[in-house]
Image (cartoon, rainbow, N blue to C red; front, side, top):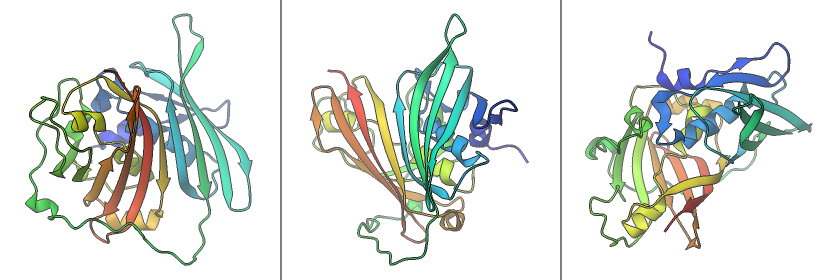
Length: 277
């Protein structure tokens, strides 16, 4: 069977010399204009923790700070468990690449929290929106030039599609869409991480104007288990994204993803995004 492009891009080789040190390389399949798709970078951060021999539990929170663009080519990831408690574990992660002189330069910093969940009272106060099923919604056409990763996802906007007229007439920042891997792949924590960063910058929708924009920091909260993700399989997720405030070159962008099969809220995220007038 042909290896899925996401698994190729996610591949990390653990060092024989240092625990928690991994080597990887960028994938042209997940390129996004000037660097890798941010969701793929976040997935690599999480994968380094998930592959660490000292891992406790499953991820509940992930924060990734994009300090600089990742260049095409090899990189190193270092994951360190800075504190392990009875039920939670706290991690720091960074990605680095050599500069022109061969010295390592950090371009991504991150923190991860994993935990052993226990059965307790649970309730979802953010139910899945009532929208037409994915088979009733048209798939989004090919994206802009230089953005390779969009081709790898089946995205079906219910509302808030990319504007067709860039005339400054935007009125809101909310997008609702169905999404999944275009080439079927069972959902896991890494792919869920990537999908939570799949929404284009909210400033484009709110203004109906293309301006330079890029994520500075994103925090993702996981509300699911590996067993629940296995139930989703390669099915659709319903996603919703919006912004609250645009001010002086930065705006926030929130996102939620639900399982089509069960309606369960799987993940929420919040990011701060840079934009230029």
